[in-house]
Image 1 (cartoon, one colour):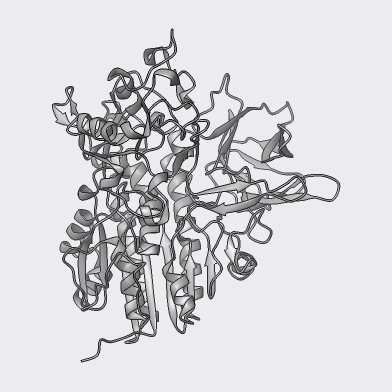
Image 2: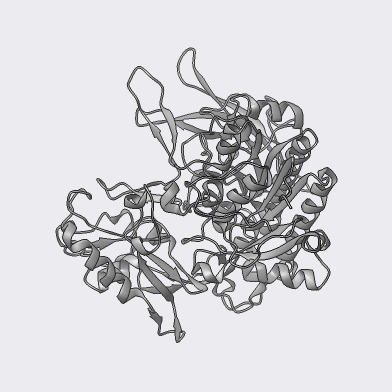
Length: 618
């Protein structure tokens, strides 16, 4: 009997949905749409990538191959000449002084939507990671994780405050401001970096009104359509930064008024205007504007949920959840808009929000988490993670409205989730074990030593940047490399062997389950760009944020006291994703690499030798 083929494949990505939570909630009858999908076809735990990170995993989904086949190994990478951390998903190139800069997508490999396009089938791809700038193919795309703010980074927020001596947090600009006796105050919104060593900015005049019923802020020029009340978000506000007599950069921003006494105002990163983005964020170019004109304004930043606002203590959990719900609603509107006109081919839509919610709210599931500081967790937030799983189930139910017997429905997550209670300062471990040397007089105990600026490269054999692993200071590759190429394989094995099974004496636990030379994990044309040694931390442990930026910590292992309390950058065997389909499939051994071949198979498009995965369809 010939295998059934389908006219349409609908793929819903639910970023970070964890198998254990999902299975438990299905047993309790709390996820009826997913349970029905399982009954109609099947369900499996889905093997993820090392590292188990969103851009790495979804890129593996897209190309049907391991990270060595697409070149995305982390959010960050290091510049081998300068050792400094850089964006690992894209870069901006200055082609010449006479031409504008160009955005370059660092993900390689041939995607499933490109293969379908070659077979004459269209695709609609909404917010897939590592699609900035977007591919050209038959169909439509709105780029996802990787789209920067107008300043070119993952997203830098602003906080305006009358509080004394404010200190900036992570990825944040802080502006001391004080309303005058009439309540007037001017804030400056940071825009793009001009390339001349300064920043474009925009002044916005505000009036602060205080009263017995609460405070509010208004804008005399009408930037706020209605006054902004305390504890509320604005809608998207268009902004324009002048860049010369005839040039300007358009963007959009939202504000959250924390309080009027003292004055405290939070601003999201300034994001691309969908109608006039600084660089392309959709294919065709005007598709982003088409969605805005049809559905209203929406977040364009790749990581749009304001987790930095929460972790820096600028907004509270309630404000964060309000914004998360807005983003979920934006995404659902796009999904319905496109599914209603989908006739054939592939539809893909990623919901990132469950991942972001778990990062912030995981601690409320664990009364002993160090982020609580020894206090009991606020009971108001204990069920938030499960509530978002139920919202995801509602999304799945909504997709069924558009599915017929010629539609393959696939629901997948890229990885699961676990606790994040202890940080591993990998550069500190390298320093203490003789692989990384500091300049005379520098010590980790003295405070933050970020960006590897205090490293003595003439005596350093290995260093760490990012959340995936570490690099060797290789001669003729790194700017001041000292390790000979012939020594590299042995040194990779040596460092991996010493990290494997690294213990946490304070807790009498294993912190690092395993470590691998890169050749044991990856293969393909991008192998040489990978970290030299990859780490698989035990659940509850993760490489530290300080390490990601080339920093050292005061000890090898320290408590994670931040609100970012859950994570997944651990041993991938501990955080598999989930996979549901409305057709029977091979559940045993299912992995992310298998999904692209499965989609092609479902739509009747032959695979080729460039695909490592194999179709799961029975």
